[in-house]
Length: 341
Image 1 (cartoon, rainbow, N blue to C red):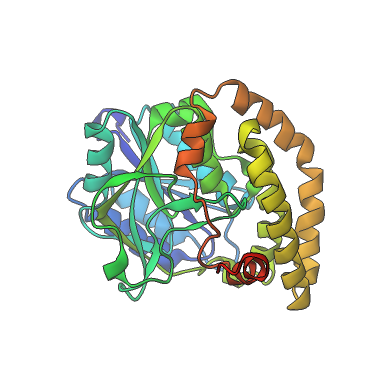
Image 2 (spheres, rainbow, N blue to C red):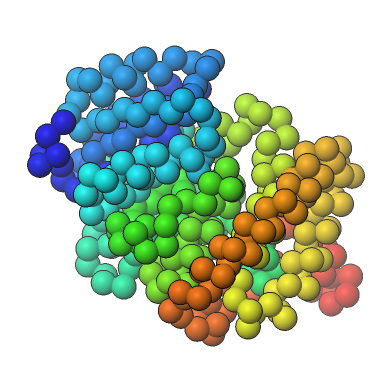
């Protein structure tokens, strides 16, 4: 492909045994009012052939196909596409889940946020579930309990924020970032493999001085957990592996007295609940794997915290000072002591 013909926006679509979904995703990106280049990475699919994606790329100059020879997870697969985009001088780089489709103005509206608001490094929109009426995410949150979560998940579309605004973070299910963000903070941390890598990326971006914007005008539709449901126990294991990694890498020292004790309580309760519900195997596997990642987390923490450009007060202002709404068990536990749900 002639690089000079690019429009300097690249969207990475990671395929893993979901060829039909990925083709629908790519088709929605080819139908944008601002058409990006689409970098499709096949993450070593075995059950479904990626040949139709290869054929699509061969016929459309906007499409690039990359074959990964291993399954390097959501993080590693997306990094292959993001790395390609950096090497080929794209100004804006994003991802869209392969089991998602985007409304025609999705790219245009996200790129507008980045072009017109100087301090914005990452832009995300309204990600609805496949019924097109239920919110999957209107951005990501991180709470003083050390637990992240999607804003508004499960709520009606009508409850979504109606105006563009600064938020804590973006879902990796659909976002666009300026290349300077990735050049400054690095690629997605592949130790996460999948789950909470987006919260980690946005928290690193915020610590480095890049803000995140939400716009309700960029809408996409997502088949919730269409990929992770194929592997029993995967989501549980990744949750318990990645929550401590996220915490130790990123939480500023000044906020530790507030967040650390709450994180210990929430992690312990959620782990106990998983064991009680018969998910003890993958939960404990994730917990022990988190211990092996502690040296990595502390090494990364040193780099992240030494290069940060914002204050503890700023980070405190953008995190959620409550328990995420979906953590009903944790809310019940708090009510025992405070009477507050």
